[in-house]
Structure formats: structure tokens, C-alpha cells
Image (cartoon, rainbow, N blue to C red; front, side):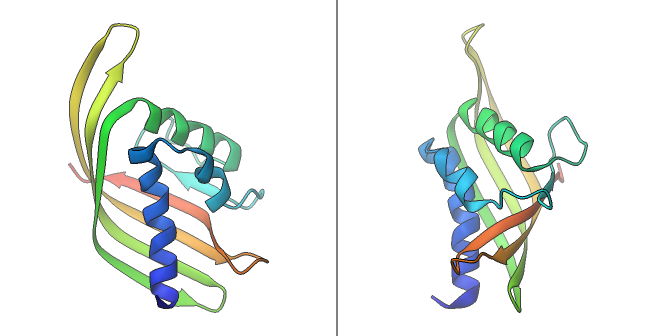
Length: 135
């Protein structure tokens, strides 16, 4: 698979949590450390830490049914113990409001940047995420 393949598989696993609703892996593939950070294309737009990021990711993926994603044109750069992934991203699904029993189809085009480091166990862990809409 190679280093680039190992790195991109972590990013695939991140978005696959939205399709499978197996949200337990979100906390495992991201580094639980005060140095973790994220920016999102959804409010709140401030810089977030690990705990808030994982909670918001879980809430987001649970509220979208029929979630699908496509990672386009990924560029993976691997350095000594670190990696950067930059890609275009398309996400689709139905945003569900369980209280009102309504749903709205969504298609979000955007860009994604992930920074990963190799953990003590040799596995790649996400340490920074930046998602931004382009539509």
C-alpha cells in the first residue's frame, strides 16, 4: 500500500464513519492531545480542540442519512513522521430533522486539508482538519 496509501486510508475511514454510522473510530483515528485542532465549514467557525471536534463530527454524521462522499484529486505529501492530505470533497445525503420529521437533500462541494502524524504505535493519526465549502 505504501505510505501515501496508508495515509489516505485514514482519511477514507474518517468519511466512511458517516456512511456506516460507526462513529467509534472517529475518536481513534484522531490524536487526543491538546495540540489537535480543526476548522469546519459548519458553525461554529472557531478553532476547535479534540473533544469538541469529535462531538460535532458525531452529531453531523448522525443527522445525515444516505450520506455519501467522494474524495477528488487527493495530494498526499509524506514527511518524516508527518503527512498532509489536500483534496477536493463532495458530500451528499439527506439532512434529517427528527423532531419535525422532515429532510432536505444536500450536496456540499468543498476542499479538505488533513495533517497527520505517526503515533507511537506506528499508526497515522489526524492532528488537524480544515474543511471549507466552495459552493
